[in-house]
Image (cartoon, rainbow, N blue to C red):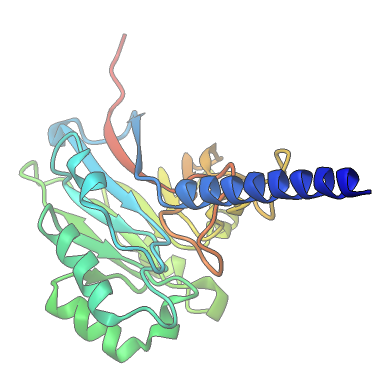
Length: 263
């Protein structure tokens, strides 16, 4: 009887250690600083502009942006795009400010709201955005500075969950090349092959955040081919509710866009 009890305790201890190690792995995956590099070519990208580089980071939530992530950038990007959920309820405003300061040191930051950002209190958040010279796009466009004179626009679409989105207002503005920045990836349903858009940058889904046996609440983040062009849906950099991830590691993207070369 004593021997059997001892064996049971050993099994329980081994199971507890395995569970703890598994949780540690999930915590590590949620706090990774994976920078994914993406090279995209478009036939109608203005050759006169040369190359456009973008740092895309979404769903930061409660995380502090790591210096390790920023040290891994291959170069300073032309623009930094935050794909919504910069913050959420309970996140100290100074942490949000510090994140914006870090990004602002390497380039111009533009962002759209996500569904969790209003929890932080929009008046206080917008005050910090203004002080840190972050461009908030609410159904309006940011024109990337270009010595070529070509109009390269990032159209920021406001949060769809609250019915704030006005895609058509952005698409009416003339542009030589247009990128859409929208937190909710469902924005692609409002676009088709006639839309004057080549790339959509989205987050929101966290790639499912916790995926078991290949399954999660949402699809894992990736580049999708759409009728209008491409849509990048990111796993995001932070987490919501639990600071854990499984098979959907935290990530940011360094995107390089050029004109398609004739072979």
